[in-house]
Every structure is written in C-alpha cells, then in structure tokens.
Length: 384
Picture (cartoon, rainbow, N blue to C red):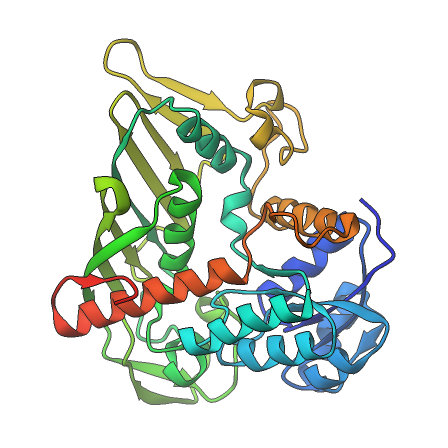
C-alpha cells in the first residue's frame, strides 16, 4: 500500500515507534514525531530516521502537511490531542483509551462525525489473522449459539514493588489500570469475535502492592526491570493490580475475565475460549498462529494460520503463507491496512472494518460500569 498522505505521530514511548514501523511497512510516510519534550523525542527520531521533531503536539497538529495524526501519548492527553486534531481537520488514529471518561469520548465521537474525519482506536489485537478467523466461524454458525465466553489477560511487568510506569498514576492513566490498559483489549476482542455486547458486570479488584518505589526520572514502558535506579520515593498505589469480572452478555451468554499485571512468567498473554452449543474455540496470544477448535463427537482440531485455509474475512489480513508466523507488530500493520484503505477509498459513509471512536466510547462505557461494580461490590448494568 502506498499513499500520498503524510502522518505525524505523537508519543515516543513503547507504542509510538510501533506505529511508525507499521506505517513504514505500508509505504506511508511519517513526516515527524512529537514527545513530552524535544530532548526525549530527538533520540527516538534519530533512531527511527525521522526527519522532523516537533516542539510540541500542538506544533505537529498545526503542520498543514500532516493529514493523519497518530496519538500514542499517555492516557490523559488522548482527549485534548484528538479533539485538537479533529478541529484542525486531521484524521485521527488514537491509542486506547480514547479518553478519560465517557463524557469526553462521546464528544469525540460527535466531533468526528461532524467534521467527517476518519477515526480509529488502536485495538490492534483484533488484527491477528486467527482473531478474524474466529469471528468468521462464529458468524457463520460453526459454534452454534454462544453460551460461555471466558479467558484472561496476564502480564508480569509490574510484579515487583520497584516496577514503575506512568500508568500507575491515576492522574495520567485513569482511575483503573489493569482493566483499562489490557482488559479493554480482551473485552473489545470478545465483542468483535462474538458480535455480542455486555449487558451487566460484577467485578472484584485487588491491589497487592499498595506502595511502590517511584524512580526520580521517567522510564519507558516495560523497561522497569532493566533499571537500577536508587533514587526513588514511596508512592501509594490507588489502581488495581488484578481484577476478575463476571459478564452477562446480550442473548443469555455468560463470561468471566481475569486481568493481572503481577502474574510471574506471563509476559503478555491474552487467552480466550468461546463455548457454543455445537463447538468451541480457544486462542492464546503467546501462540497466535494456532486456533484450537473443540468438538464433542469427533477429534478436536488445531488450525494453523495459513491463508489458503482461512475464511476470506481473515485471509485479507494474513500477509505470509502457512508456516510463516505473524505476530504482534503485524497487527499494527494490518489495522493500518484497513484504516488507510478506507481513507484512500474516500467514502466516509461506508461502514469501517476497523475499530472506531464509537468502539472506544463503548469500551469506556463498559469500563465505567466495571469500576462502579468493583467499588460498590454488586452487579451493575452497562450504561445504567
């Protein structure tokens, strides 16, 4: 894919460079980046061979050459930066969460519609080929009626009291952490695969490390265990390390989700299993090229990612033949295939085949119900 559109990326931490790499693989030109400061952004720009370092996000958005803005900054900046980009006439691809609350996200949904700008939320996990294959199989009735949806998203990068990241601070990351940061990916993926929305939730949270050692200087995501900082301060923690959530889906299906950022040995494992009236599906993001298919009356199957064996819905997002694995960086590329294909087509009344601001708003609606449930220790209707 090639396009004449030029892109600016806001944010130079872990995810910003992932956006840059994926865009370049599609032949899309990244003109420049902006970070929290020129001093922090300049080394990243040099490492990525990017020509322009903007003094601020505002300067990047104001550049008339930039048609699309990718927002990968800390969570509290997503809403003001997305709003400014839309008002400046830019198309926007925003990391999740779209905003800090549903009031802000609803405003962004309305503004994007009013300005007729393409808008996407970076729920990239949808774009593993076998995630699309699972969706296709559910849609065509291979599983029968969906009955049970269960799984987990587990990490260990915040296992120790010395592990630190800006996401631990509610002012920067939001009132929820594990659920909003990684649980939102699982919840979005299950809505995508099953086509079902959650009607009610019952959540249990725990913070196992109530006080952490905060480094005096900022560190990048996932690099905490490489640091040897001795200059730290004790920081009380007000967000969850762990959550388990009971889910009631529309149509009668039931579900459970466990989320943790303190599970030793689990580096980045999203797992789901869907049990239907006829068959089951299971998928593990640490083995992303295998889809387990469960039966009662015949042997179970493992489908290996191979474009020639996939449903057309999934085949379009598989770039390599069978036996050639595709992983996490490829999901960004495939998401942007969909976004920029839609941009090039120019029919903004067509239904997008990628997650939009409306999906981001729904996840925030779901998240607010989960947080209320955890605080009040009861079932909460979504959107109540």
